[in-house]
Length: 86
Image 1: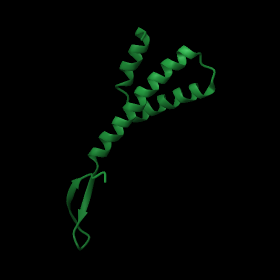
Image 2: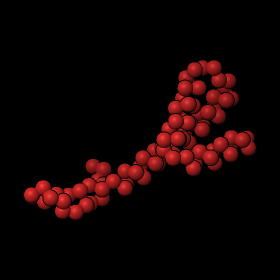
Image 3: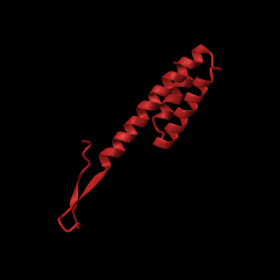
Image 4: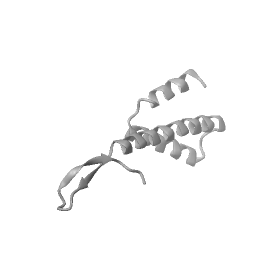
């Protein structure tokens, strides 16, 4: 991996979800255009995979923070429980 590509990967790790998704969408558009040379396509694909993983991690982290409010029989808030992904 070139030094520039390594720096790009390091920068990607610090992106928030929206910026990572935007960058991933840009990569997909470039790859779908078919105008990118093979070597560059491979590098873009690898970067896209890292961004996809980052987006997945950000979503999982957000999901873990969601709390479900439990209600009593009268419909009043009784407490909160951790998000259950069932």
